[in-house]
Length: 554
Ligand code: OOB
Image (cartoon, rainbow, N blue to C red; front, side, top):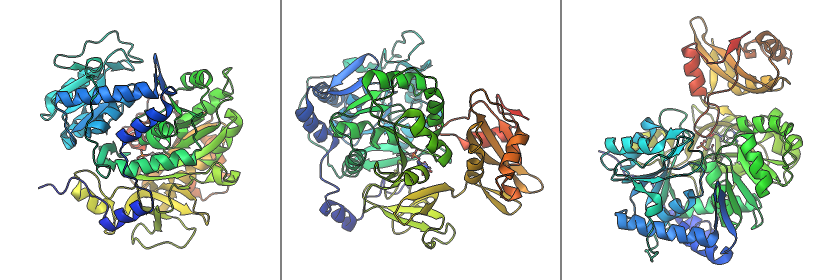
């Protein structure tokens, strides 16, 4: 038997968050209605080939909501949404919010295994997808998922969107065209703001992503505060370079934060520097967010570009650790301020503030959004608080951090403490100012014959080398020591440092011999997760197969 679907906040906490004004009883549908009234003719969203004002976005969301209801979609139904960065993403999602149906936010990179898992876990009634994106036939993928998962009754396909590149793809038999779904707008009952609004996906460092139930009340609080912390105004232009369904470009402050502020969202079909820089110039983008590997690529590209990036005020870097070396290169290369963002789809988000001193911005990953974000830094084995300023595992609880995953009672028993703190799995140090420095993952440690090597530390040493663009260190099984360290390195353009030189460089920084990586492999690029973070899981798998395409040991 399965436990309860999701775990609400205990009533005393909920009452406290309401009394503090964090939870205001507003739904996303009601928010859009208010925004359309306040900013009707301003541009809400820009994407390839389309531009919607706030009034048009509102109208489209109303029409889609009516069409979804006519299709039989009911409040509380789950609908897998797999859309790339297209303007229609917003009317689809707000249409579902208005119905009270829950989007399940798949990413464009997900394939059969993940989508079947999401559809099954959520017992989804429909899938909304695109015909093709990045030369991949998403409509056929959705059809296969619908054939395998009995609950899925409808496949809805958006045709002719960006980056299809594989010719016109007919919606597969039985699929509906998104363009034809809209119906005359009509009033629908507003869903419960304390109820679930959607299911977000966990970062999925182990196994398949888990489903994360977020409510209107809790998510809107994080969106509102994110927009304030990032100083968004109606004049701001936010570029979603990363896949917009991910929590970071969705809400930190992301497209939802931009809309909340009455600003303009620009959706980049791809995150590469060329595409993004063109959009920054054309749309006078003021703020965007990237993951560290992308920040490194943009920094390099900025030195060669002739495009005008002068409108850019803030580059956010988050999703994975941005080392101090990379952090220091960003301002000079891109001519903007850096903001570090350390967040998680489960809730808690930390930002460096725009008026924090430079050293805080370069070396910390920010401090929490809310004074009601409770933070504990504990010994991972005993759960006891470590002394102030020391490294430990981060536990958190608060007004927008979930108390349990969706339909995952067994996992919840270990992922949360009995008193409701989420075990983030991140190792952090907390400064006196409350800023957190992420120093690794609880399990991202190489046990080299008993000597514990923190992958992060070795990566930082490597990143200090002028020829190194990015570094990722993983453990390799070893008969004698149990594990040895293997460093993967992506060089800066034109450089090809040798393994021997890089090992010598780390040694000469005056570190313990066991910190010097046992092996160094120079590769062209790292395998990435669906949002573009370096995938250590795939690097470990590759080394296990002793086969990394493009790698060369020197
Ligand atoms: C964001 O969300 P997820 O759910 O994909 O991943 C969360 C995990 C964190 O637990 C941490 O391990 C890592 O990603 N992470 C960072 C980081 N930001 C996220 N590790 C070090 N430094 C950072 N700045 O990745 C996410 C959600 C909302 C906003 C930003 C990122």
